[in-house]
Amino acid sequence: MMIQDFISEEDGIGVVEVILILVVLIGLVLIFKSQITSLVNDIFDTITEQAGTV
Image: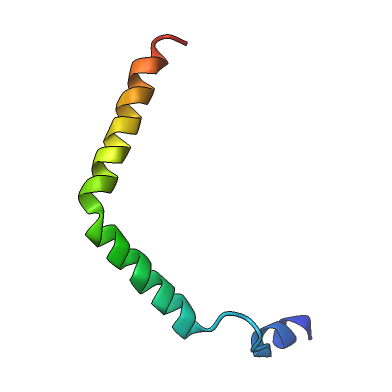
C-alpha cells in the first residue's frame, strides 16, 4: 500500500522539471568546458605535488 501511494503521489518533482534541469546543467558544462577542465587539472596537480609531503 505504501509503495502504491508513493508512486501515485504527484506532489514531487515531475519528469519535465528533471529533464529541464539536466538540459541546463549539460549546457553549462558545454559552455564552460575549458574552464572546468583547467580547474580540475590544476586541482589534481596541486594534490599530486602535495601528496609527497605527507
